[in-house]
Length: 119
Length: 106
Image 1 (tube, one colour):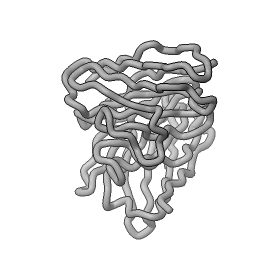
Image 2 (spheres, rainbow over the protein chains, first blue to last red):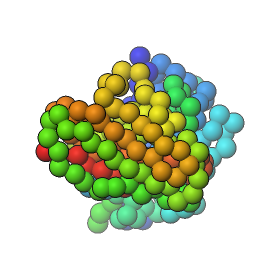
Image 3 (cartoon, chains in turn brown, green):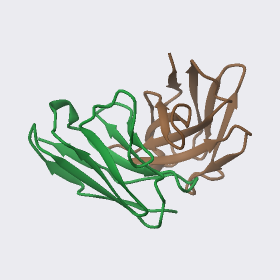
Image 4 (tube, rainbow over the protein chains, first blue to last red):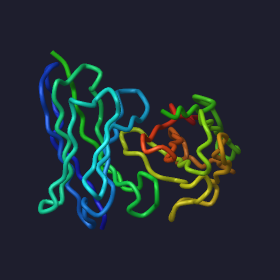
């Protein structure tokens, strides 16, 4: 069964750092595009970052320079390192594959992990 | 970035109603348009890809159409489990963007 499970969310003060993990099963995180999408409380979906098969990565403008996406093939896990966190980064963070089953679509999603940024 | 605008933002409907949600892109995206359904406390679920391709397991009462800048999602006859928030998303640009969502409630 294809599955993604996020962990690592929690309460963090503004300016702090946090690392999210997304463990994959049933497929390889290195074999497809992988992404993070977030959803602030009561708001819509926002793409955050993507890592391609070749290892290249891209970021939404407001997180560029603060967030880093990476993956560990041996652990089959995707990561999002978040630094200099702001109140506006508070959201549920989902990892998702792009194009594993369906080209150009977020087709497999994790259950999400909540990041709360508050003093 | 490509802006995606959905309308309406919310709608009230009854079981059995036909419902149509529209999505407009700020520039031509051909058919690089996907639709997702999200229920409270759950991750989004891909319903339709490439504007009109129904995903496996998704009921046939869901359909998508459009190309270029104007798209629509239609539910031909609402079932109780269809009350949710629906999002469109463009994959033309590799800076993916979503619409703001349309809440379908009773």
